[in-house]
Image (tube, rainbow, N blue to C red):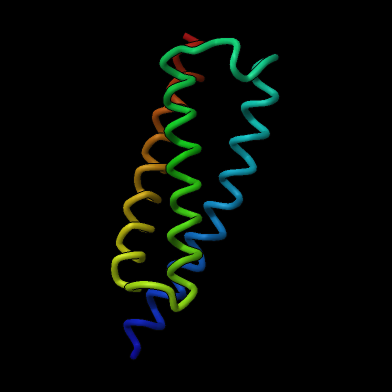
Length: 101
């Protein structure tokens, strides 16, 4: 019983961080480029995969909060896509370092 309560609490925080990250990424990308689909390069691909992984994180976290399906599987998928999105966020920040240098 205690483990399930802890998992729901963790998914709640992952859901909130992912929602904030989704809106910040959209805002950051709109401010950074004049038209979103004009340049298709490596950094755009990283951005696109990052947005998709954030959306999947939000989806699986929401499914975990509802009694739909297996909660253990949705918890594992939520954590996996959250880690992927955080890693891609770190990689996308390398663009700022490379443009300054």
